[in-house]
Length: 342
Ligand code: BGC
Image (cartoon, rainbow, N blue to C red):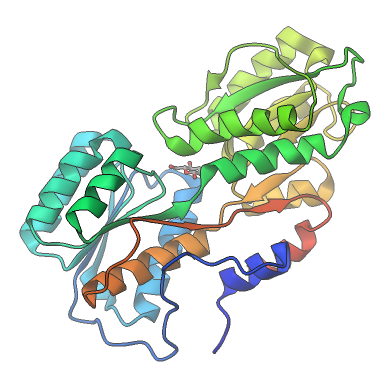
């Protein structure tokens, strides 16, 4: 069987079998799901990472035997009401499966109730509902699951990328502390919460003293916001700013523009980490203009979500939480991962 691209990436990068828990491997010969209607809700099309994710979802659904005509992907435009209407319309249309990237994860209970009531299998992606909500699916034996990555791992990897450089390298002002700023994604999103917490925890676990130069600021996953926030930080903290942590690459790319504009040089007088491994960010890591990033495996997540929907269509039971691995990406393995992603 041809190894899936995402699995070979995980294998090469970690030299360990990284599997999506209970997600069954897709069969070589795709079954015929061409009469099955699939509804996909994306929180917002204007999101670099979710665009990659969405493209892979569409591609893999067709590869698995779904018909393009029966796949509908909706843009929630980051609007809770818009998304609720889209879900109602999918239910009214009698779709056979729903894949949902929530605008607001705290809406999961209401949405789950509606979808379960309509007897439609449901796969949540990217924005993980609360654990208490997942417990409810399990207790009731509902055909509902979450397929994604454990964001704590990505935060830990970000912190480790900085910790691995060593205090002597990072502590440019010699105060014995890592002076940093945090640029956070959407605070309602567990990816943002966990990356913010676990990146710093990894530094502390490595017994490095940390010093936040200010409170965490919200960049909402957006490049322009990353740029605006870090432009201000550089003006305010100047050479005391040693590390910029961004919850994703879009914001890190914005931060990088700010760093360049301020005449600073990543790797020499400042360090910068993101998450996602967008093409542009990988090139920056190769060039040394970004210290590192973390590959947010959209292949594994999209394929895993489709596999989970198929499993439900086939009446299989599965875990309510299905995680895949992130991959730490630094100058050492950036070329290798780039080649695998092409
Ligand atoms: C990604 C972000 C993206 C967000 C959307 C995160 O996992 O790292 O780039 O904006 O998901 O919910």
